[in-house]
Image (cartoon, rainbow, N blue to C red; front, top):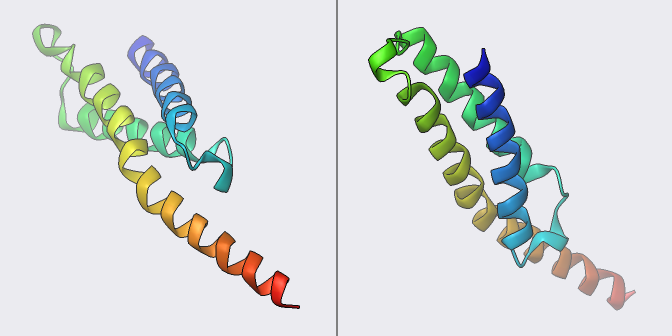
Length: 99
């Protein structure tokens, strides 16, 4: 249970760190990337636990892989989300200015 708490807290921190480093963060909410990070980490943690990765000699795998996934998931998600939101916002601004 402690590994679940540590994975969740690390995922939240990683999501906020990626959000803070993203230059397009003004186009989407502050909780989107941390939410993606937490979801990815917890799903990975559940899959690893269901697969039986709980042995004492390999217990570090049960929290190291979800932490790595929690860092990679918002990095991968930020690129297409930022681009699409920037494009949609620009189109909406141009539509409003044409009125």
